[in-house]
Length: 389
Image (cartoon, rainbow, N blue to C red):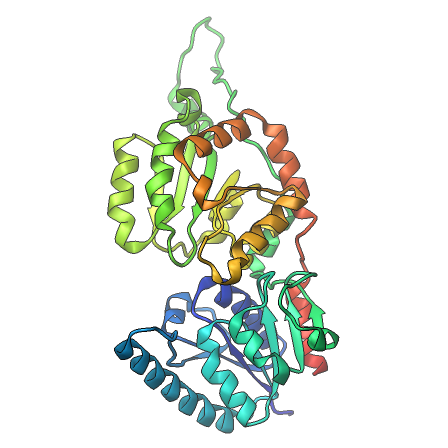
């Protein structure tokens, strides 16, 4: 019986890095590879009972300006390098795949010292800082976009477009047709007595009618997007009453803002489900008729696969302005409307939401257009690269 080949996957500690890394880990583990994910402590909340791969927490930190914070960061990074050095010596992986983010730095330093084969995966349309540092040491640079900024010409020959790996449960949503809710359902009694008579046996039918809402999913990313908590409740409250009564809002929010944000919605008497983290996010994406979100590329990849129209608000302080570049790519496809942070106002958002809900044909067209940029074979493509290497 042949011994399983070992793979290490290094990933940053945000969902945008972790979700594609987990998708690859799951696919490789199913293909009989021995897979271990290296990430920082943030990875713990993404662990699931059914995982068929291992993980190790690796100390790391961003470099900060204050002396004390800088010294602490240097200590954590040094400790992370020592730990990954010995783990790589012990495991002897065939390949190390890194998904960007500062948490991958210790693993990649050790991989270079120990001369292991490296694949870098870039999720965004702009080549990330850590990936740029290690590009010359990589055998392959895999990209999520066909055109990725800031990759030097000397590395073009080892750059391969594969797409951004998406979780299996999200991939399944691609088979579902976008369906605009029917607000015009009318209850008809099963008897014909000339007036509305509600029988006990008819209660289930009435319940189904009442559940026909326009579902809006709000995803603030790992940071929860405080600007969403500030603006969105008021923007929804400003909608015309006939629209306001039709919408159901599901919002992912920063933990420290949960109570404050919920109370705003409650005060405005809006239908709201709000959490810091959704473990059933695939179900929330499936139910959504419109998604309001930041424009991290992993989120965009999942929403595109699920064929969901989007309103995207790029994080203005994202490194190298990569979120705006990601968002513009989707807008050019016709699948999203982009609002810059400076223009993200109560009035602008209210007007846009009313326009979209009033015009189902726009949302249906956006769904068809965004489906065209969805890459359904990204995980498969990356698995092939790993095997070939």
